Image (cartoon, rainbow, N blue to C red; front, side, top):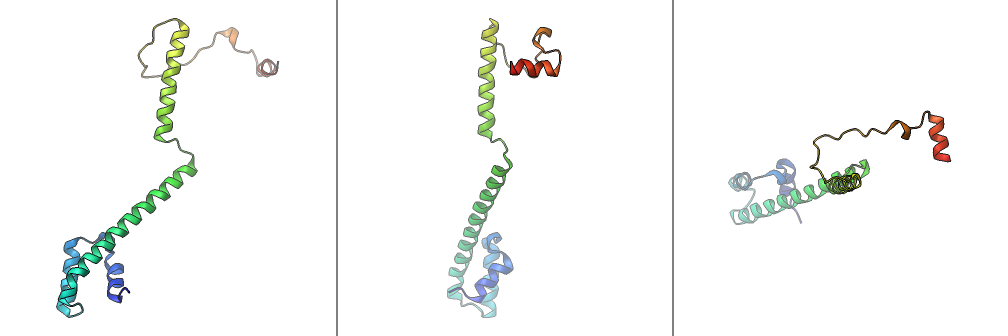
Length: 134
């Protein structure tokens, strides 16, 4: 059973953030005041540090889960998604170059706009609808 002292230390100092030196200082002060026996002090320091480490790990796991859930709900592309798209673009660039009859070129720094010949573009929006329906 945890003592009131241990609970107080957890709350007052935030065991997850304490360094060994700071924990030792606090426990030494408690020994000096007679609130903790000298024999218990070493075990107490280790126990507080162990709990602090456990709290850090639990907090990190919690934050990772929450961030992952939030990003999943935001429908943001992952690094894997972007890598897959990049590979697909490279494959398509090679295919386009092959269809043009030319040798593959080095990737361009900027994408060039695609310009359709006038005969490929419909004259009006209604014509485009008719062509698509036709």
